[in-house]
Image (cartoon, rainbow, N blue to C red; front, side, top):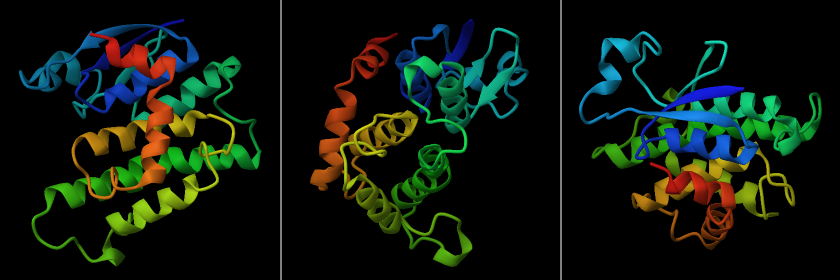
Length: 201
């Protein structure tokens, strides 16, 4: 199957591209120049009314958005890649937990910490708690190592690893200071699929 990824290398779409490389998918890239407003043009909004990337269009025209959904679908569509445990297994539950965690906890907490000059909202009013709790949770999950599922690299590591690498590049607190997180990021970003995705246009 051939898919099209609407993409900008300086965006979260790089996560989806890495996953496409990990599973060995046949795909095309459609570059979206966010600075020029291409994500808000009618042609793109007709595909994704949110005007966000990544947006993955499957060969049958189905549109997938949200990194967690894209990663989960690709892991299931390409089972030979071995990135998603079987349905009903506890390991699969762990992978799904972290796919949801990255989008619903880590990214909002990171944005809150990096963008707010004032104190964050009261913890009880937001679903992600606070940034330090999120980082504590990640460090604990990585403590057995070397991956989220222990010795097995999985779809969860694509999203979490890319998110942590990206956050570290932008100077997010506690990312580079944590030896555990940095060791994890170094393992993740040394993967051939990550390197291929990073070298692309």
